Image (cartoon, rainbow, N blue to C red; front, side):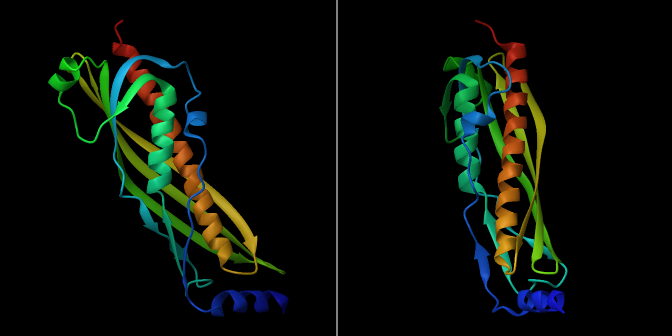
Length: 205
Protein backbone atom coordinates (compact mmCIF):
# COMPACT_ATOMS: atom_id res chain seq x y z
CA UNK A 1 0.00 0.00 0.00
CA UNK A 2 1.06 3.56 -0.66
CA UNK A 3 0.69 4.48 3.02
CA UNK A 4 3.12 1.76 4.01
CA UNK A 5 5.58 2.95 1.40
CA UNK A 6 5.43 6.49 2.72
CA UNK A 7 5.98 5.36 6.30
CA UNK A 8 8.87 3.13 5.20
CA UNK A 9 10.53 5.98 3.32
CA UNK A 10 10.27 8.21 6.39
CA UNK A 11 11.65 5.55 8.68
CA UNK A 12 14.61 4.37 6.68
CA UNK A 13 16.15 7.51 5.27
CA UNK A 14 19.76 7.82 6.42
CA UNK A 15 19.86 9.14 9.97
CA UNK A 16 20.91 12.76 10.33
CA UNK A 17 20.49 15.82 12.52
CA UNK A 18 18.15 18.55 11.33
CA UNK A 19 18.71 22.07 12.63
CA UNK A 20 17.39 25.17 10.91
CA UNK A 21 17.19 28.81 12.03
CA UNK A 22 14.01 29.72 13.87
CA UNK A 23 12.00 32.16 11.70
CA UNK A 24 11.97 35.68 13.12
CA UNK A 25 9.41 38.45 12.98
CA UNK A 26 9.73 42.16 13.73
CA UNK A 27 9.85 42.53 17.50
CA UNK A 28 8.24 45.96 17.17
CA UNK A 29 5.13 44.29 15.75
CA UNK A 30 4.76 42.36 19.02
CA UNK A 31 4.64 45.55 21.12
CA UNK A 32 1.57 47.19 19.64
CA UNK A 33 -0.86 46.28 22.45
CA UNK A 34 -1.44 49.45 24.47
CA UNK A 35 0.34 52.78 24.29
CA UNK A 36 4.09 53.22 24.53
CA UNK A 37 5.15 53.44 28.17
CA UNK A 38 6.73 56.81 28.96
CA UNK A 39 9.91 57.05 31.01
CA UNK A 40 13.52 55.96 30.96
CA UNK A 41 14.34 52.31 31.62
CA UNK A 42 17.19 49.81 31.73
CA UNK A 43 16.74 46.21 30.64
CA UNK A 44 18.61 42.90 30.73
CA UNK A 45 17.51 40.15 28.32
CA UNK A 46 18.97 36.85 29.48
CA UNK A 47 19.67 34.35 26.70
CA UNK A 48 21.58 31.14 25.98
CA UNK A 49 19.27 28.55 27.54
CA UNK A 50 16.86 27.77 24.72
CA UNK A 51 18.88 25.53 22.37
CA UNK A 52 16.34 22.72 22.27
CA UNK A 53 16.34 19.10 21.16
CA UNK A 54 12.91 17.90 20.07
CA UNK A 55 11.31 14.86 21.68
CA UNK A 56 9.82 12.75 18.88
CA UNK A 57 6.63 10.80 19.64
CA UNK A 58 6.37 7.46 17.77
CA UNK A 59 8.81 5.66 15.49
CA UNK A 60 8.41 7.63 12.27
CA UNK A 61 11.54 9.74 11.70
CA UNK A 62 12.88 8.51 15.06
CA UNK A 63 16.27 7.75 13.48
CA UNK A 64 16.83 11.48 13.13
CA UNK A 65 17.55 14.23 15.65
CA UNK A 66 15.78 17.58 15.46
CA UNK A 67 17.12 20.72 17.09
CA UNK A 68 16.05 24.35 17.30
CA UNK A 69 18.15 27.18 18.71
CA UNK A 70 15.71 29.87 19.83
CA UNK A 71 18.34 32.11 21.43
CA UNK A 72 19.19 34.44 18.50
CA UNK A 73 15.53 35.00 17.60
CA UNK A 74 14.54 35.47 21.26
CA UNK A 75 17.18 38.08 21.96
CA UNK A 76 16.55 40.00 18.73
CA UNK A 77 12.75 40.04 18.99
CA UNK A 78 12.64 40.74 22.74
CA UNK A 79 14.97 43.72 22.43
CA UNK A 80 13.10 45.10 19.43
CA UNK A 81 9.80 44.71 21.28
CA UNK A 82 11.08 46.49 24.40
CA UNK A 83 12.55 49.28 22.28
CA UNK A 84 9.13 49.85 20.73
CA UNK A 85 7.17 49.42 23.97
CA UNK A 86 9.20 51.78 26.18
CA UNK A 87 9.86 55.47 25.45
CA UNK A 88 13.56 55.08 26.25
CA UNK A 89 15.42 51.86 27.10
CA UNK A 90 19.07 51.01 27.58
CA UNK A 91 20.14 47.36 27.44
CA UNK A 92 22.69 46.42 30.09
CA UNK A 93 24.83 43.34 30.70
CA UNK A 94 24.40 42.96 34.46
CA UNK A 95 21.68 43.14 37.10
CA UNK A 96 21.16 46.57 38.63
CA UNK A 97 20.42 47.14 42.32
CA UNK A 98 17.50 49.34 43.40
CA UNK A 99 19.99 52.06 44.35
CA UNK A 100 21.58 51.84 40.88
CA UNK A 101 18.17 52.34 39.30
CA UNK A 102 17.43 55.41 41.42
CA UNK A 103 20.91 56.95 41.30
CA UNK A 104 21.17 56.64 37.51
CA UNK A 105 17.81 58.31 36.97
CA UNK A 106 15.85 55.37 35.61
CA UNK A 107 12.11 54.99 36.11
CA UNK A 108 12.64 51.26 36.30
CA UNK A 109 14.79 48.24 35.50
CA UNK A 110 13.65 44.90 34.12
CA UNK A 111 15.16 41.46 33.67
CA UNK A 112 13.62 38.87 31.36
CA UNK A 113 15.12 35.45 32.08
CA UNK A 114 14.62 32.22 30.16
CA UNK A 115 13.31 29.26 32.12
CA UNK A 116 11.95 25.92 30.84
CA UNK A 117 11.62 25.09 27.15
CA UNK A 118 10.19 21.92 25.59
CA UNK A 119 9.72 20.81 22.01
CA UNK A 120 7.70 17.76 20.95
CA UNK A 121 6.76 16.44 17.53
CA UNK A 122 5.09 13.50 15.86
CA UNK A 123 4.31 12.30 12.34
CA UNK A 124 0.95 11.01 11.10
CA UNK A 125 1.18 8.93 7.92
CA UNK A 126 -1.21 9.81 5.08
CA UNK A 127 -1.93 8.19 1.74
CA UNK A 128 0.56 10.28 -0.22
CA UNK A 129 2.64 11.92 2.47
CA UNK A 130 3.12 12.30 6.20
CA UNK A 131 2.04 15.25 8.35
CA UNK A 132 4.41 16.40 11.06
CA UNK A 133 2.97 18.33 13.99
CA UNK A 134 5.18 20.08 16.54
CA UNK A 135 4.49 21.93 19.78
CA UNK A 136 6.84 24.27 21.61
CA UNK A 137 6.27 25.45 25.20
CA UNK A 138 8.34 28.21 26.77
CA UNK A 139 8.56 29.61 30.30
CA UNK A 140 10.31 32.79 31.39
CA UNK A 141 10.52 35.09 34.40
CA UNK A 142 10.05 38.85 34.32
CA UNK A 143 11.44 40.84 37.25
CA UNK A 144 10.95 44.60 37.42
CA UNK A 145 12.53 47.05 39.85
CA UNK A 146 10.81 50.40 40.23
CA UNK A 147 12.50 53.71 40.98
CA UNK A 148 11.13 53.56 44.54
CA UNK A 149 12.99 50.28 45.12
CA UNK A 150 9.95 48.01 44.91
CA UNK A 151 10.58 44.74 43.05
CA UNK A 152 7.92 42.59 41.37
CA UNK A 153 8.15 39.21 39.65
CA UNK A 154 5.85 37.62 37.09
CA UNK A 155 5.94 34.20 35.40
CA UNK A 156 5.53 34.20 31.61
CA UNK A 157 4.51 31.40 29.23
CA UNK A 158 4.35 30.97 25.47
CA UNK A 159 2.99 28.18 23.28
CA UNK A 160 3.16 27.38 19.59
CA UNK A 161 1.81 24.57 17.40
CA UNK A 162 2.59 24.02 13.72
CA UNK A 163 2.00 21.29 11.13
CA UNK A 164 3.81 20.53 7.87
CA UNK A 165 3.16 17.85 5.24
CA UNK A 166 5.87 16.15 3.21
CA UNK A 167 7.22 12.77 2.05
CA UNK A 168 10.47 13.36 3.98
CA UNK A 169 11.45 13.98 7.56
CA UNK A 170 12.37 17.56 6.75
CA UNK A 171 8.71 18.32 7.48
CA UNK A 172 9.41 17.69 11.16
CA UNK A 173 12.15 20.32 11.25
CA UNK A 174 9.92 22.88 9.51
CA UNK A 175 7.09 22.20 11.95
CA UNK A 176 9.51 22.43 14.90
CA UNK A 177 11.02 25.78 13.91
CA UNK A 178 7.64 27.29 12.99
CA UNK A 179 6.12 26.21 16.33
CA UNK A 180 9.15 27.69 18.09
CA UNK A 181 8.65 31.00 16.30
CA UNK A 182 4.98 31.08 17.31
CA UNK A 183 5.86 30.30 20.94
CA UNK A 184 8.41 33.12 20.95
CA UNK A 185 5.84 35.57 19.63
CA UNK A 186 3.36 34.43 22.27
CA UNK A 187 5.71 34.82 25.24
CA UNK A 188 7.15 38.13 24.03
CA UNK A 189 3.67 39.62 23.70
CA UNK A 190 2.91 38.54 27.26
CA UNK A 191 6.21 40.01 28.47
CA UNK A 192 5.46 43.36 26.84
CA UNK A 193 1.89 43.61 28.15
CA UNK A 194 3.05 42.71 31.68
CA UNK A 195 5.96 45.16 31.55
CA UNK A 196 3.70 48.02 30.51
CA UNK A 197 1.16 47.23 33.22
CA UNK A 198 3.75 47.01 36.01
CA UNK A 199 5.61 50.17 35.05
CA UNK A 200 2.41 52.14 34.42
CA UNK A 201 1.42 51.61 38.06
CA UNK A 202 4.52 53.32 39.41
CA UNK A 203 5.48 55.82 36.69
CA UNK A 204 5.93 59.39 37.88
CA UNK A 205 6.72 62.25 35.54
